Length: 142
Image (cartoon, rainbow, N blue to C red):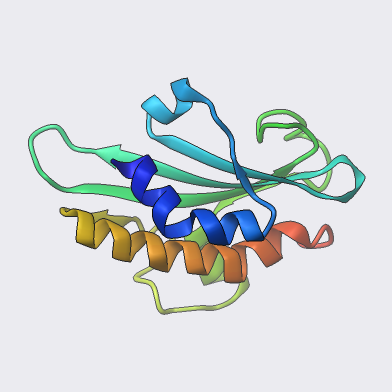
């Protein structure tokens, strides 16, 4: 359900920005959906949606993580100077000074497919408008 909604709501916009969903069934089964884009000089930018489900409640939540590394995964080359990793909300809060979200550790919560689509639309827009710019600027730091 989450992957289908993610691709339906954000897929075209991410694809137009040069990001492809990495097809890793094991990671996706554990709730991690990673989009990757190659950058200049052997760098890669990653926008990850991390899903958490609760066992005894209909509430679920997700957050968006941003990473840049020299490897085809954020773990490869993470110790290389210039490699970065932060949540989207940390970047929005600390880098851009945006206070439209509740705080730098915000997770988007949902209990229905309608709420999920709305949350994905908001998170996807913020990821492409701000997160992508931060990731793709090889001079940016955190």
